[in-house]
Length: 75
Image (cartoon, rainbow, N blue to C red; front, side):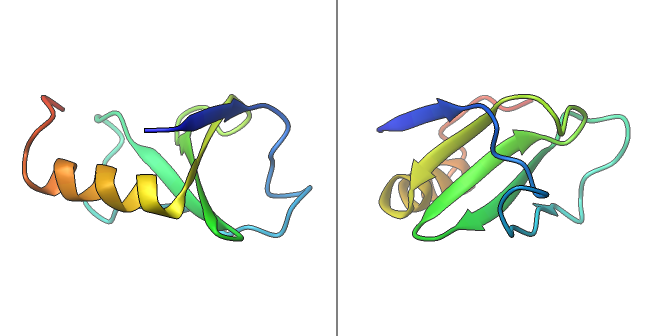
């Protein structure tokens, strides 16, 4: 998986809409996702001014499939 950690990507600087899972609650670690052209940006919802992980659509789709299959220990 090819990813870049990118500082300075903020909603006020680039027109992006950050989305958080409807299953997310205040007690859990959550991330937000935004479309940025053909890429996807991911950030910690509790630290919106922190680093942003930027990945290409192919990598994002592959990671999403693996998460849905339960291949990562996320709890």
